[in-house]
Image 1 (cartoon, rainbow, N blue to C red):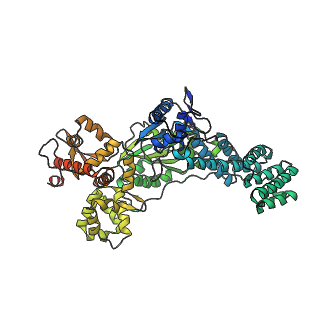
Image 2 (image 1 turned 90 degrees about the vertical axis):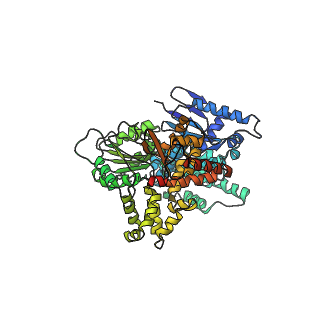
Image 3 (image 1 turned 60 degrees about the horizontal axis):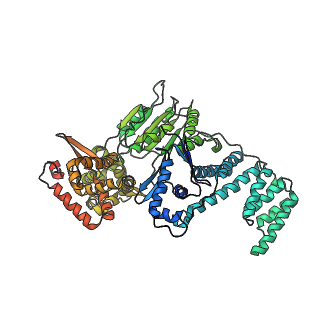
Length: 630
C-alpha cells in the first residue's frame, strides 16, 4: 500500500512523500518536472525538454544529462502513485489517485471559486479563491517557447489574475475592504493601468472610509492615462468617481445570496433507442434491485470486450432500477471519447459537489474525499454508475458503505482485484438475431428484409460489434436511398471499410485508435503484422514464425493484445489454442500499417503472412474462411 505523494511546481518545485521530501527548486530536474507537470498526461519529446531547460545552446551531453534528471525524479516518486514514463522518444508524467499536483489543485479551486462568485455565493467563493491564490507561485522555465509551454504558462497566469480579481470582489461584497486593500495595491503597483483593479481599489478605499485617498487615486490614474497613452478614464470609472463624490448607497456591500439546497442528482445519460440485449439488461436490473434488507451495497461489475454495448446496457438497466434509488443517480465515465482519463480524485470532487458540499468543504486528498463521500452517502438510497473502468484501483475509493446504495461498473475485465463485488455479469457477443434486430431498429424491417444476402454479408463484417451496428445503422438511416448491396461492396475494400462505421465524430476507428495508442510499441507492431493474416484463426506458432520469436516470446507479445481484446481466443483444440482478430480490427491494422510501416517492410510482411496461410506445416498452418466453412 503506497502512501500519498504530493508534487509541487508552483514556486518551489518539490516532491513530498510519506517519509521523505526532495526540493528541486532552481535545479535542472526541477525544470524537467515543471515542464512535464505543465503538460501532464501528454508525451513531451526529449528535444523539447532539452531545449526548454537550458538557456542558449544545450551542451553536447544534454541527452545523457536529461536521462539523469529523469532518474532523479523517478527515484523520488512513490511507486504506484506517480511515474515518468518513456513513450516514443519522449516522457510523460502520470499520476494515480494517491498522488496530487498543486497545479491541478490550483486550476480546480479557480474553476470552483469563479463558479461560486458568479452564482452570488460570495462567502464560499472567497474561501475557495483565497485557497487558489495561496497556491500560486512562479512558473519560470529557462526557455518556455522551446519547451512548448509558453502558452500554457500564459494561460495559468491569466487564470491567476482572474482568480485574484474575483477573490478581491468577493472580499468587498463581504465587507472585508480593509483586508482587500493590500492585495489590490500590490496588483496596482505591478500594473498601474489595470482597469479592473483600479475600480476595485476605489471601491475598497471608499468602503474602508478612506474617501480622500480614493479620490486622489482617481486623479492619479487620470493623469497617468493622459501622459502614458493620451486617454481618459473609461466611462465606468468616471461613473464610479461620481458615485464616490455623491456617497451613492449602491456602493455598499451586497447581501450574500443564500444557496438553495442541492437537488437530488439525476445524471444518467439518455436511453438508447432500439436497445437489444434484453437478457443482459434484465440480469443487470435484477442485480441492482432492492429485494429486502441487505448488509452491504450491491456492487455489480459488467465485463466484456469493447464495442459490445456495455454502456448501453448499463444505462438502460440503471434507468429501470432508478425507482429503487429515489435520492439520486450519479454517473461518471472514466474514459470518455475525446477526453483524457478521469481519476477517482476528480470524480469524488464532482460527486461531493453534486451531493451538496461547497467547494471549500471538499478535502484535498483522495482518501479524505472518499471518507467524506461515504459520510455523504450514508442514510441515502443512491445508484452510482461508473462507466468504462480499466482497473480496480480506479474505483476502490468510490464505493459507498451504505447498504441502501448500489454501484454498477462497466469494464473490459472482471476486475478480480475488487473484493467488494457482489455480482459479475459477462457480456457476450451480439447474436446474429440481435444484430438483425438492432439494424432493423435503425433502418426499418422492410429495408432489411429486401436484401437478405447483402445484409448477411454486412453483419458478417460487423461481427457482433454493437458500436459497428449502431454507427452503420445511423448512417444508413440518414441515407434512405442507400442499398445494402452498396454498403456490402464498400465493405470489401480495406481503404473505405472503416468509413462506413463513422457518424457524428463517433465510430469504430476512433475507439480502436484510443486503445491502440495505449499499447506498447512492440505490441502495436505485432498487431499490424497479424492483420496481414486476414480473417483466419492462427495458433501461437504462427505468431512466433511471423515475428521470428520463440514461443515464450510470442506468448509475451500477445499478452497486451489479448488484454485489450485486439486479439481473442477463438477455440482450444487438441491442446492448442487458436486466436482470432476481429474483421474491423483487421481493417484498422492495415490502415495503421500503411501509415507507420515503410513499403518494403509491408511487402515482406505480406509475403511471410501469405506463406503461413498456405503453409503445409501443421504447426503454423492457419484455418482460413474456406476451411472454416467446410
